[in-house]
Image 1 (tube, rainbow, N blue to C red):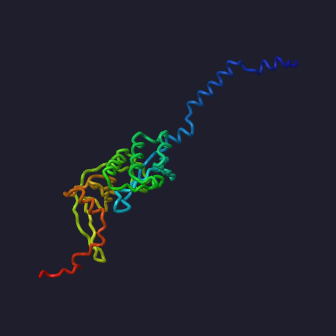
Image 2 (image 1 turned 90 degrees about the vertical axis):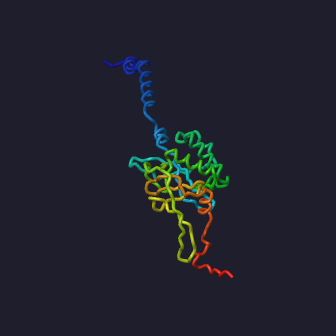
Image 3 (image 1 turned 180 degrees about the vertical axis):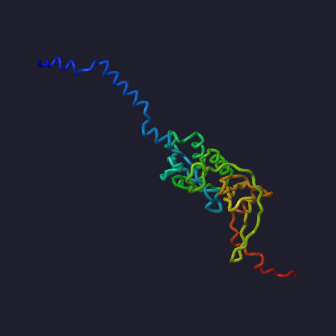
Length: 239
């Protein structure tokens, strides 16, 4: 028996309430599933890498980056520099914490404006440099340059005693050398007071020289390459 058009439509058409519930269920399921954008933002991390001073007036070099941690437990290959000259453009990002805002503003205050868009920032020796250094380490996201393991953060260590010696190179010039107890090849930051970073343990701490911190900073800051070895000086006998 043929089915009329009206009867066919009645059999195929779902009630309005059923359609409404179906849409509501889909909306609820979509709201429960995290978006790719949310996953990407939550995986981003603002880190700071630190390296040796570039010149006599520099305490240390710092580079803020945005990166992510991949499943292998390493940082991703992509690292995006943070332009401290445009702090306002990062303040709404989820990976920027309140202490990061303070740190980025302090970096910006320590460097010339024309270099605020650089990838690496040379922080001059000053009391602000010490405040900046300690603030960066306290974030738990401070690393030695080229570090690729998120767990290898720089953390605070104990104060170390140092022995100040002089080394004479092959051409007879003398250079100061700071021998820190139990640490080979430390990274010295000529702040006032000076700091060390152990490259193996990634510990950072104060250096106890037994001298005024200003004197030690001056010794490390000024080049001594023009000072000849004492044995090569021609001393005139007293008359």
